[in-house]
Amino acid sequence: MIARWLIVGFVIWLAITGAFRFAGETFFNSGPGGVTWLFLILPLVLFALTYVALIVFKVDPNDRSEAASVFAVPGLLIGIYQINSFGVMYPNLEAALANEFAALMFACYAAVIVAGILSSHLRTAPDGA
Image 1 (tube, rainbow, N blue to C red):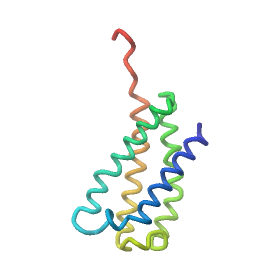
Image 2: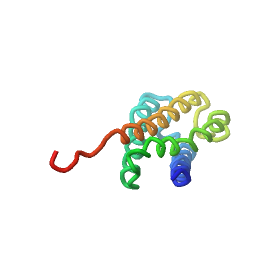
Image 3: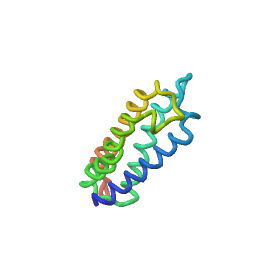
Image 4: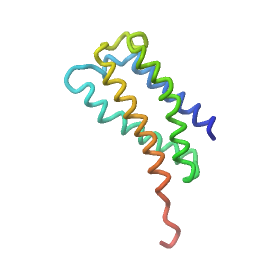
């Protein structure tokens, strides 16, 4: 289970990194609403994506917290390099956005972990209840 969720986490990290690298300037800018909208939307999207993935892959409710935590690990670890090398990784983004990017990244990974915790506590009601 751990290897599967590490791979899923890496694939999601790669997709998001690619989006910021090749099209980030269109939606992640310092102008009005750019950063604010991403802070409102992206953590919710990752929360929902994680919750749906845990349900679709039929992860046992007792294992969902662990699965979501493992899901977040690749992005957290590689994110250290991203933050440290923001100008190299994202030459299309303003250098002044590095702090906001770091905060957004960690907000998204917190949402992933919270999704796992919440979904592990939600149980379906037994028949007849």
